[in-house]
Length: 453
Image (cartoon, helix red, strand yellow):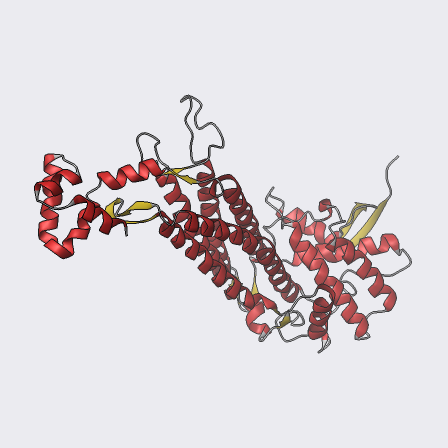
């Protein structure tokens, strides 16, 4: 037996839907125009949009613009959205879409309406007039993105970075007395401590956390209440401030009203800046992962100064080969994130004309995907590699002893030119450091003592 259907109409005509379909005609029109098999906006964005819609409904009731019955029904539906209880099939719109995410906003408005009507069929709810009352896509979407970036960064990315920081600090302390051959231009340079190397990595991560946390401050400002262009057309003058107050009361957040809605709604500068911070973070971990990969190279034909934990077979045809797979995973995530960061910059330029950015959905996807993927990759890097990373002290010691780097310590005593001549002579004769020092009546132990500091 064929299920019952409902008919919805707009200026273009009528569309029939299965009675249990949660979205409506605006969503269906958008799907027909832009279904390419592309990704969809991650669910966390819809949960935060649900929070904002809930606060909007309560605000409209407090301001006397929405009946208590309608506000309660909308609130009930939005709470389900916030809890993730509405199936993902209700949100079919892909990231390549028209406008500044109008299809996403209307999709949510229609779902809220339909869920509310399933529970309260006697109500006359309208997706625009009631569920979108006092709102516009153009102030809702950047407000929701700001909320989402706050939640993801503080809830996932910063904790993942803190784990990495803690392990690096632990390595710095544990390896404080291991003398290592420092290298510049990939060539032997001077001696240093392995703990000092990891203190540098630790500080890189710490500075990224400081910069990212500072950059998040821009996202405490919400332009809600600005409606289409920032001047609050067709909404109550106290609407935006009331919504923000409700958000902060209900979820213990610290959002504030936008200092200038015209700037926040028409530009995407804050997201370009934040993408730059993520890009820098990726650069940091390219450096860290690559260094560890090279320190662990070999084992026979490379440096082999760090012992990288074995996690899987490294070759289909070379038995026993072990590769730095976790480093390589992180390196590819860094490439992926940097590509998304470049996409954010391009979206801000290409899509931003006058009072609206038309590429907001792609920008939203790029930022959310970057943060979520990066946080997961850092957790994996910490768990599968950093925790169990160990120094190969025998190899480290051998490289120190076989290097002429210790002759650098003689330069202040015998002069740069004479020290350089000793290096050249030793290389020409193919002899070790001890031999060349003894040949010139220099005490090897004194040089070693000075060199290991």
